[in-house]
Length: 470
Image (cartoon, rainbow, N blue to C red; front, side, top):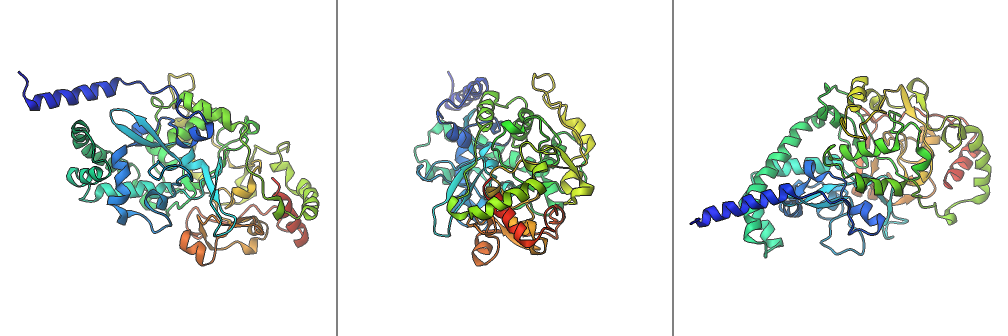
């Protein structure tokens, strides 16, 4: 006859066996709306970087002292945005949910590609899919989890007490499961912190930015150097026109589909866990996803018409969809922007990237080392501020008037500056709600891309007015 203890252990073993045998869902069919799927569906990151749901749920309350001093509560202070109209306890945009051995919360495409703007400080927040996640502090999220796991309070008794406050009806089997899960989660977070130890030797990435390829060096066991590869999060609109173009900021890949898989793996998926059907659904949607238009009332149509001719002469060859050089790489020696991202992606890493997916039909094969930065179409340009590959210039006015490029400004304040074409980046409100950006730090230089900056002032103003229409 089995004892109570052996029954419990047997039940726990059965739970693990059932979880281990459970198949990954073919698609997030519960999200019939593709925009909702994009914001909340899984692409397969939960296995490697996901957190058990109830631990994830209580960490911001239990470790509020570890959160940055930014607006909002809980994960909002790291840039995760709640969606208006959804229940207060819903997960924020950019988080996914997958039932494995236990329910896990992961990251998805929207973590990096849903942003926001406000027309005025008192206006409601407009949430835009496909826009760079201008609020998101990905490095801050990783550092928050590390700080939690390093705290003595990260133990079974403390965390379970917090969980029971949120979920007083939690079953005894789930409580038993979490006795093992809490310790394993702590161990996993600390292991990832060791992988992220390179954070400590580089300037903070800040909001709306990420170092994409240094994590790949760790993953692929490529020797780590001291380069800073931090870049602005990009937009995801109109991917159909980008097929065959040089993609990523340095143009190191020309396959939209491969770029998408690379992004999902960079966010935490593995070649084994990558949810190809879910990702394909998103891929098909972003082929023709359009950015919102700049408000017509904020455009001087006559001045914009003048700017159209100037744009055609000065900018179209590199940035118009039919431009001779759009989607091609301009050498660093010519563009003269910060070299960090280019130098961070090495030839050795390029070779190793092309080993990802070995034995699979989609194995990577398009990564290559370049000598500069890629010329991109400018669709939705107004919502892609700050500008340059590293986000070091706050608005279009500063881009075309180099003497107005600030040495220090604040990112993450989402109130729009309609005249300068970018987000308000200075003043008390920006300083209070935003995050300081210092162009003197390694990887943050705001030099270069001086095209159009010697035009007469009226021509530059007309050019800015026209670029509002993209």
